[in-house]
Amino acid sequence: MKKKAVLNNNVVCQTRMTAIKDTMGILSGKWKFHILGTLIRGEKLRFMDLLREIDGIGTKMLSKELQDLEMNHLVKRTVFNTKPVTVEYEITEYGKTLSPIIEEIANWGIDYRNKLHKRSEIAV
Amino acid sequence: MKKKAVLNNNVVCQTRMTAIKDTMGILSGKWKFHILGTLIRGEKLRFMDLLREIDGIGTKMLSKELQDLEMNHLVKRTVFNTKPVTVEYEITEYGKTLSPIIEEIANWGIDYRNKLHKRSEIAV
DNA sequence: ACCATTGGTTTCCTTTTGGAAACTAATTTC
DNA sequence: GAAATTAGTTTCCAAAAGGAAACCAATGGT
Image (cartoon, rainbow over the protein chains, first blue to last red):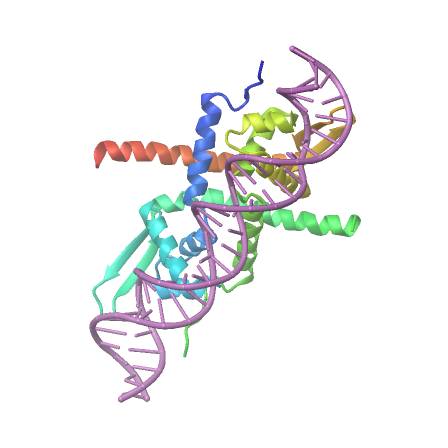
């Protein structure tokens, strides 16, 4: 008789797993957190502003990631009919609901660094 | 005069960005959340148990991801001198500190699905 | 005339990630 | 004697992710 999965074999776990997959899919890639973090702090920013703020990102990635975020209603894109065109990006109200996640992740990371330093003082 | 970054150009923001990079680096990849989630619920599990619990994962990935997690002190690996060998994996106390993050991410994902359903009823 | 600026797109290339299958070696079970 | 189980490692391959540079059109500045 073969053994089978038991722990993950119920609806609650499956739902949670799918939920985690959804969230992480939306926040996937090297730049999403940087873009969201910058927009949460910065109100309205233009494409070139973001390019300057986010160190290391290129136009291709910025453009692509902004499209992803816009599709998921986390970022709003507004085009102004100036010449040359002006485009403003801002975080949506829905996008702001990601703040607690970003906070938790940032705080855990800060704690992690601190623990590494303490450990190296004692253990080496 | 060239424009320069202003928002992300202070120590607090840089620290937070690094912290986020650290956390997400540790939790990177397709399987980390699944492994951690399973171990948080499951107390002690053996390699083959995890292989059965986590749907779709293969031996290579499971082995590699467990090594990553062990290196970061999130998972403890214990070898028993039986024949053939028995190996038990369990979450560490430190690993449990990731629970709030996992909870936030799971809950946001559940909300996201609910909003999608509501939206499709009204808009489409 | 020429360069810079706006907000991108496209192409090409490299790196990273992940999966399938074969293999290890010792032991128990049929 | 053959097969299954334990816990993995290794190799080979395909797909995805990401970066650099060139290019677009329209306009403003020197």
